[in-house]
Image 1: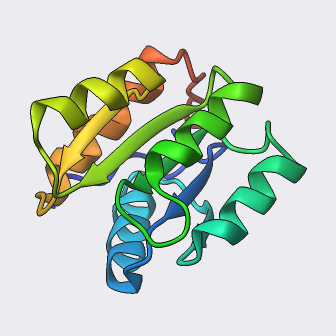
Image 2: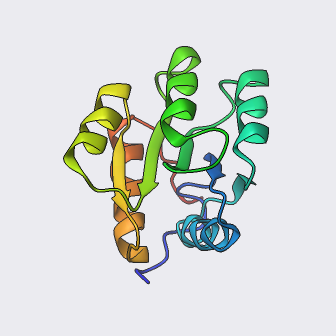
Length: 142
C-alpha cells in the first residue's frame, strides 16, 4: 500500500461506498482510511444507498460505487447523483472493462473508472486525482 497521507489532508471528506460485495466495502474503506478519509458511509444494498442520496443529495464529496449490482446498478446510481449534484467526485469500480461500458460511464459523468481487481495504490491515486479534478479543498495540517 502507498504511503499514508497526513491524517487531516482529506479529513473533511465525506465518502460513500456502494458495493454488494462486503469484502470490497472493507477494502475500499481501508484505502480511504489510509488517505485520512474517516467520514465513510458504506452500503452493500444499493437501494439503501439511493435512499440516502435522494434524502441528502449534497452530503458526499466522494462516491466509490460498483457498476454491477442487483436491483440498482452503478450507472443508475450515477445518473441519480448527477441529477442533484454535479460536483461530487464519482469513481466506478467494475470487472467490465469493455470500451462500451467505459464510454457509457464517461457519458454519464463518471470521474474515474477502476477495473477490478485493482491494486490499492492505484485506487489511492485515482481518489487523489478525482478529488483534485473536482476542486475538493484540501485542509493543511495544523
